Image (cartoon, rainbow, N blue to C red; front, side):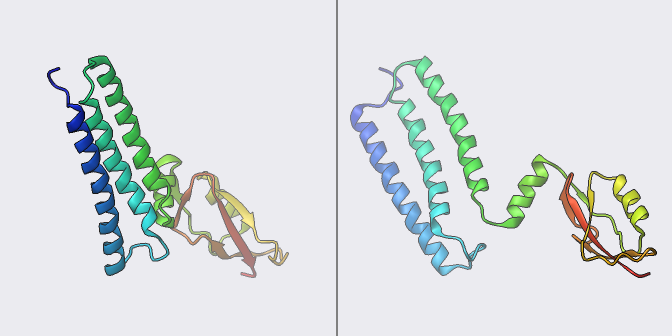
Length: 174
């Protein structure tokens, strides 16, 4: 049985990883309570789960060395690779920061900056947005004066928004 762990070594490894998960949780709790949190409304649970996932993956890897079947060991290492991807996805998908969600959205859907529409007529604003994937939405509170130009726009010019997003405008007298 060359290259495998004995049952006692495996149990010792399980104990070490279990203690490491508890210590990691205590470190996360202490660090969050003493330092300034990047996410003031956040809790230690998310961080502790992320650290525990990584340590659990280390335990999973260690168990592969307790198995004397090379095919099964290779299969478990493949499962480890998939699990690492899941742990990373969990960590970033549960992040409560709007910026993190925007970064994830930008990476998957793509974004483009909102053009400056202030001072443009409705036809010119439509033409400016026609060069993008963005849509124009006119605020229903806009006065129906004929020679109207864009007075306000949301989001502001230059703001990156997802492709196909909506730009809301309010018209006023020129």
